[in-house]
Image (tube, rainbow over all chains, first blue to last red; front, side, top):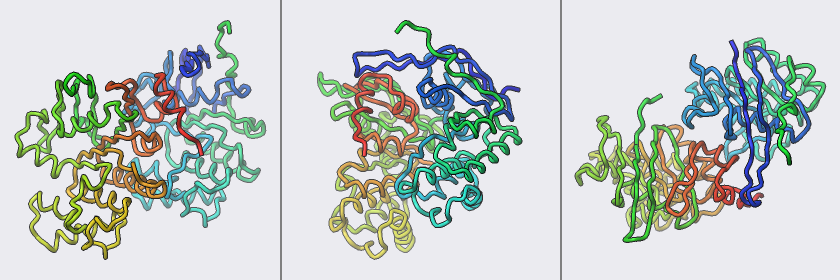
Length: 233
Length: 258
């Protein structure tokens, strides 16, 4: 059974502040991700990889097409789902490791990581115990756990972000360059964590510029340049 | 997950004479959901909030509220006693200026205790204990319980106003620029506190703000208002990261980056 199915997706941006310039991003995007598979979006910067991930997460709206995934045992089209449905999808069915961590003043790294479980009703202590395991595995120094991540280095913030994305057992997980600012040791940890998600039947869709990591995790590469809009500029 | 909304707003319109306050606003609010209303001064945000909270009577349209007994009532048709019950217990209203929501010349403890007495709590010891507990939750030191809010800083007053509103376990809270007028470090503390309390208590809230960062931090959904009308609405991060309307794009692009 397909975990995620994207059909005929299209996206343009209309820049009203620049005299309504229309920026076509992608069109006719078609791909599927099966449970236990890691599909990587490939192509140069600006091809629309991140935009596709953001549409699949409901962060960007779509102009046309469908994004169907399973949620609470039913097929749901995220492209047309109302905001409440998107929120429950995010809570229970689809995770996202963004490129940059959006920090909240005064909220500790540990709480940031545990939050997705707490939102799902897991007991706070249990959620934090799981968060500690993940942060330890990602080699984030323990003295940082109780601090808000705003002042952390890029690599430290990224590991907080990864732990937050990996803490749930969502059946679909989106990864936007999760290893971009990590050293070799931590890259290897993330590669192992991705392998475990695959073994658990999670469908992964990601962007990896790092060739070495991409080769290790990708089951299939979808070339995003094939979705370039065919309009006369 | 609850299967029914708490609030249903249908075609709410408010004219001041011939001048438009807000027009044709419709939405639903669910338990546990925070809705931000953003837009510049004069866009109709506060008119809408005051209409929703039965402070103003709209020119047309309805606001239906699911009462604690599960009955749906149009809040403009409630008896005065029923309206008071809502305002004193089941709803909260956090004003931008704490002086509008607090009694400045009675003690902090009494400000919190008053709402409890309004719901029939008569036991002094219990009221004081609950007030102390709430002062703690909003990070006001216990030894300030007998001080008047006149002697409090702006941030403390705002936190006291929040405690006063939340002490009765309301299901719906209206907030009008809750962090306006506070300096940024105080804002951050207040936002974190609000975010925590809203999540913990499963409150529904309508927050009016012109600060998009506040909206991003606190709200799940957002409505953008201009000239009295809702011009764009949706998931907060969708509206902020992929704004469609010219005015929303202008708002988002006007945020100063640090």
